[in-house]
Length: 388
Image 1 (tube, rainbow, N blue to C red):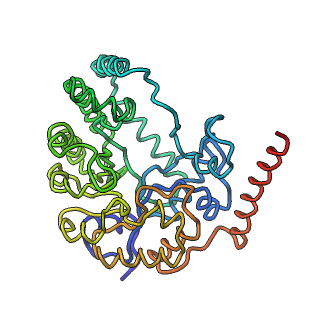
Image 2 (cartoon, rainbow, N blue to C red):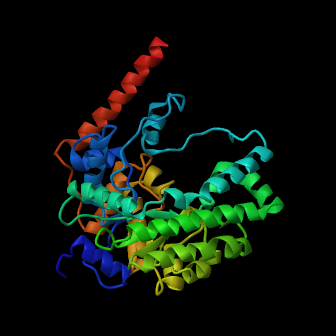
Image 3 (cartoon, rainbow, N blue to C red):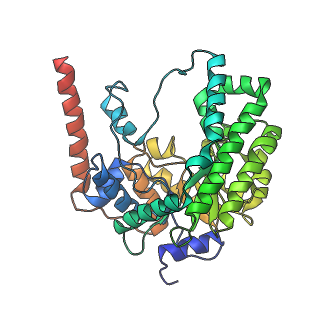
């Protein structure tokens, strides 16, 4: 079969058609990969964003988070050099809930609802659309003509925002005491997101977007199916419908085991599912057998244990099985992201299975260069510890 462009390969996979090879989809935030494919360790700022985009362009057919620059971790995050390296692309901070009481968290929700109720006052659809076009013009200027298909936007109904800010305990109390406050928050977030979608959607910029909501954990849902059918799925459908009005495909993302509500998700109009978290009990073959005629699949290669602690041969075996289990409509990739915990040799093994040959680095001695850089980080850390 003749070699396809990335766009041709992505469209064929979405439509369950034959492709020249299995495409790769991921969120790539791994310094070793960036250095391996570009020859440079990404610095903070725009240059780091450019290098990350170019590495993604070399590696992947379809991706989200393209043009993400590393950022300086919080000063008090840790003094462990390995953990600091992992945190260069993470906005997560580890701290106690900032609310001193449940009552304080409820007042925060009320204040947020008041602020969100005025979202139309400052909403400028034309400016938002123009900003999006300029962003992608810059992004694609860093990449090749046959560039990776980049995610247009990530759209949620607000569930992750309110639950993440309150914490699951206070969120659950509020859902029992005054569920209307949660509904109001989700409704306002969804209304605003629908307007954003209509302002930015253009299939010439990108053919897919991510709709999301982390609704599950290991082996089970975070919320009851009844609650999701009342509060989450109808609003998710509105986001999917808004994208579909502009011929944009919707890839739904949720960590955890979502098998119990897969029929509900399909009814909302999702076109694909990600990341098929295997350690949570998801299985590429089972999802394909039950729903492969309705949606495309992405992910399924475990990043929490396999890519971070496994061997290249183990990775190749899992990748080959995933391709066998899902022969069409499957984008191979990690179970959420390739972050700095993933070993370079394992990432390259996954790419090798997709490409059919081992991916070459930017220069012959690139592996040694990466090793020297890591050793230098540890050396500097040890010197600082001695001074202390």
